[in-house]
Image (tube, rainbow, N blue to C red; front, side, top):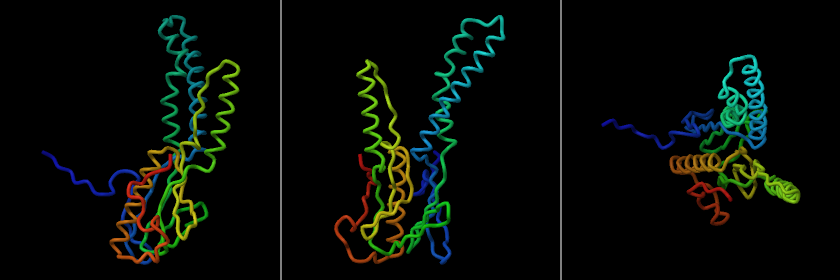
Amino acid sequence: MIEKSIAPFDGLPRTKIITDENGDSAYRITPFELTPLLAKIADFLAVVSAICIGIFSVLQVSKNQQATDLQWILSITSPWLSYPFMKLLWRLALRRPSRIVIAPRQVKVRRWYGWAVFDRTLPHKFSALAHDKTRVEQEQIDFVVRREQARGKIIHKTRYYGESFHIIFEYLGQRQDLLTIYGPESAKRMLTRLIACNSVMNKKNRMDEGASLGPDYEWPDDTGDIPR
């Protein structure tokens, strides 16, 4: 029987032990995730791609004078058949990498301008917050749904911000956003990994995290729960 040893930080998001500029061991976490805006763009591009596939298929079949009924049916329905694959493809293609480093005394996140550095020696915790635009989006969706219902139509609107979360580093009561992730499962996986790396770093370095500011700061959420 083959046995495979599974390291604690195998799997996603990718996590690697590195040596930082101070010569200390640190965790570098590299998630590849969608933001709600990129998810919305991916779905739009999926629709456009599916329509283009449909047009191309119909044009190709129309050139064939011996085309069968099945070929016509497949060409006409190709936009609906191809849309789920185009959606998956574009969502995978538009994922963007982030880099977060948890070092003994710092938490760093890569920004477009360089590294944003936060003090890890202060009382802190990692947590997830519902996206700031969740309520506004839900109000807009409710308005559209009610309007269409009054017209005798039933529609479904995809929630993007309502399915997205801010992963934050909170210390001394101050919110510092690390990244925004579309998808509750992805957000929970990221939060759980950050909490685990942070806990291991605390034990490994036997750090004194400072005076307690309350029970919420005594120990981070073990399960990496996200708000629903």
